[in-house]
Length: 200
Image (tube, rainbow, N blue to C red; front, side, top):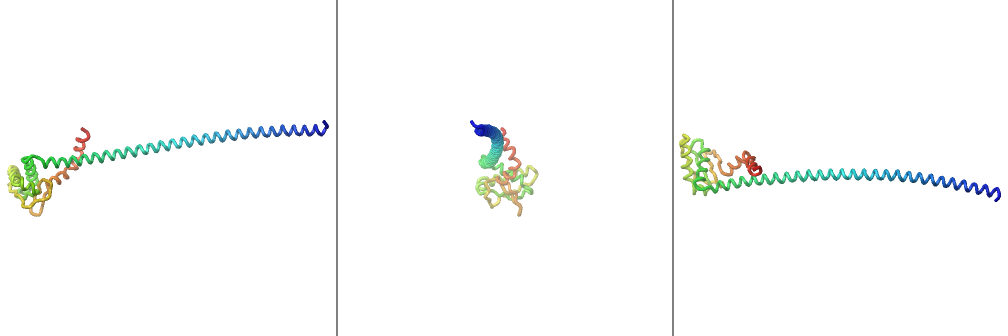
């Protein structure tokens, strides 16, 4: 081997060693970069997972509170419906009382609403035919006992009311129909009725 061959071989050997060192360093740098990016990717992955979990939890809470609110609204609506039905049932029971009780009920309200004792009692056509005279007599008896001269009279006129009485003195009327009485007491009695229906 000549001197030039030795020099060339040495240059090749040095170049190979340098290339290997450069490749080794590049591999280390690549591995380091890959590891860093893998770490960043893992961090981003878990960050997205945590954000997704939080979002799901928030949605579940929102859906839960919305469902709870809707359930409360449904329950409230059902309770209001039941209270309304209770008032309808009260009207039905009042109208289906035995004759003497119902006539006494009408007379009581007529006497209670009377101011002068000379008012006209207006009934619906069924009550006028069935109980009219009896109601007038009972109401006048109640007034007489209270010290008010009982001179109530039965009107020739009838009204399309479910039941109850309307008293008229000249142009002034006092509505004691079943519908008006129930409406008048509805606000006052709604809470006790609800208590009886739902708390007992």
